[in-house]
Length: 296
Image 1 (spheres, one colour):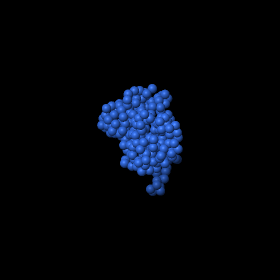
Image 2 (cartoon, helix red, strand yellow):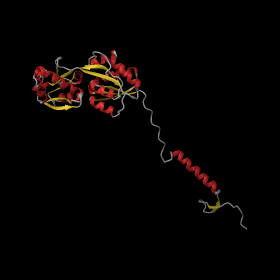
Image 3 (cartoon, helix red, strand yellow):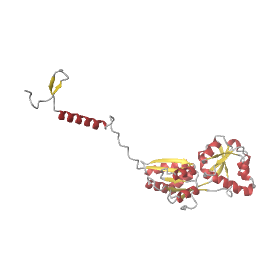
Image 4 (cartoon, one colour):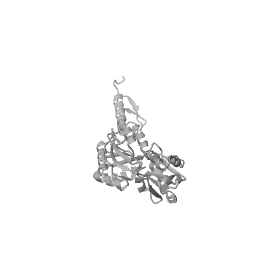
């Protein structure tokens, strides 16, 4: 008679003979446990589990600033790090109108420093920045390629240049340039602006591009800020614009609404307005504001 409840017979891979094997339920359990262990070791897909992303740096400050502030803000960053040794300061320097557009489109930043009050006011009205304060002033000047230094000695000589480069009307230095030419037309002839613009070969999106073209000899003259001359080297000459026709640029600064690091942003603004900050700005050609006031 056949024995009841006999264990199933399975082949032995080593001997080719048959031997008794474990019950089916026990075999399935062992297989399941082995598969689960493999999943745990490989992360479920045959690859090691990814490490979690590092947390954002708590001392990272993002400053958007007009191109003319590049060297001065570099100096302020050095001073800032004396009291914030672990701070990482990241800059975005460009034409003020470009930065305004970036902020309007939601670009993340902590501080915005503008080369005029018009673009700052637009951002303030849109609720994109907190109440700004004027922290510096700047004076437009004429830069002349050394080859033309003997013929362009005053604003009145500007129409004699063969190639002039200025900023676009949207960029602050371009707006100031047109205001200067309009004011000069009252004393240098009603057609003075037209005679200068007839010599314009390029209109640039920021003041550093104007300076670069004159510095490289691609233009005979251009109008930039006094602060830009500190980085121009010895390949250009500087012609002062008469104060009665010049336009003084006012620079407002503000904390960006929704800044990721508002505390650091306010400390940066405070430093820019402090005696130390003002000393640094003067070293790079800026002037202290006539009156430190909020721009409304």
